[in-house]
Image 1: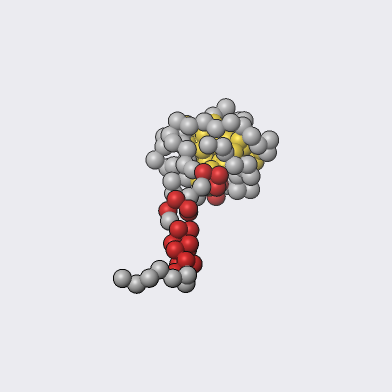
Image 2: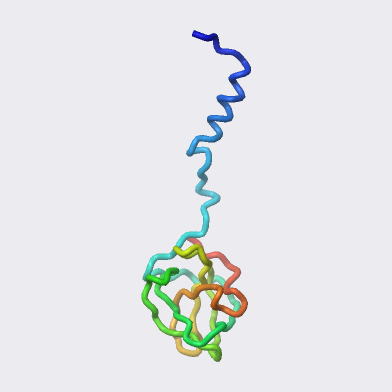
Length: 121
């Protein structure tokens, strides 16, 4: 058996730092997908418009969630907040002031890329 020596201490410390527990932290949680049927709070006073006619406003931050209504170029959209969708894209929850519908819209379908306020979890 080899005796334990001081040069092995830095290796043991490095191994401890690389453990899975050391790499996760609840304080630095990434934005998370909002499931179908989720409604976050209205945290953003900004309004905008879509980039096209017929943009879906969905019940969650995924194309697999049902559409609640459509937004058109002439509609004013009130942003609430944004999150990361299941597809890796950012999504903004918004209310269409022209129709009253509210839902999740992909930020790349909004003129100014959607809300700048992150949705809480």
